[in-house]
Image 1: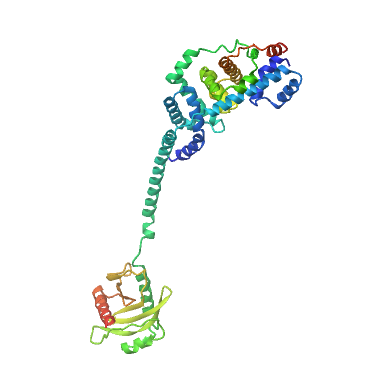
Image 2: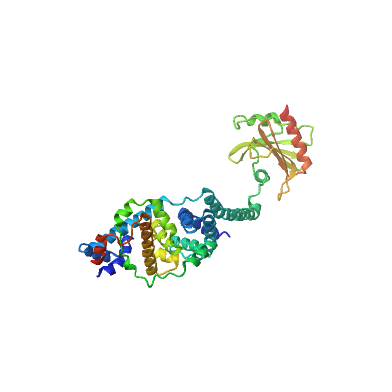
Length: 248
Length: 191
């Protein structure tokens, strides 16, 4: 190839843009051509000084400008994030609404369970472990069977009577279930060690869907639950007697 | 809107590393700080808007430089630069005829960076941009061609002319006249 043609390619050689074949050919040509060799040296030097000058006089971008541009890009991104948050909140609210019937706190749930125990006790052929209307017989029966003791009220001369007691198991702990009677209604008084999941107090109310009345309170570290199919005020009066007895 | 989030993140990731280069290029083109800042801002705004049209797999750097360069050409300074330069006569000129040499190995050794920078600044825009993209930003010919929307052949010829112009400018500055050295003339003739 003639020098004139190679001269056209020297720029590409200097810029490392020649193919490997062309580079090899040019190298072979340079061995016998001082003119092209000199041209390459000059072009390389010119490129080098251009690069050096360009880098030395490289304009440094102002930090403020970078911040401004970054903010522009990021601000739009933040807006997007706000939308994402809004979407996330909307999804959470929707879930909450949909799951509320399932996940809502059910303060009556423990009472329902106790109502089941009460019903099972009444249905049992031998509902009571200790049968006595005398609290001085019933109370000592629990000695050694429970980690706590309690004081039953004196029900003599009241519309209520004590039928006896048994051990009850509720949520992996044992407690006392005392069966009392009011007319034809039999009422269970459950006593367990108190737990944080119990609400501080539940005044006499009617359990749905069983229709049983219940009253519960915490006293002296114990949880009392009075439960039966009598009217709420009957349950309440009995509960008051138990509260009174526990205070003594 | 939420579909844009990854796009914006991707844009930031791709575009911010080019910030310094884009600013430098803008400054060399405009030779004015404020104009360069406006130009870079405009470039990012346009690029962010048009990012969805950017085709993955194509050259992002060239794409950004092209946006900046087109914005420049449409700016007042850019329009003025285009008006004064006119359409290049490069096709008629013989590129290979850069033959009247001074002992440039010596000239280039003693020339200051400042003088070279001045020579680059004095180049017409269409030479300046191609030289900067090649030698300072180190873009490949193909990238420069994409940036300037030119065929690679035209990029090469413009580069050659830009370098020749720089060389001549440096010769003038140093007071050395082209072709004044018998040695180099002899070498030229031997081609």
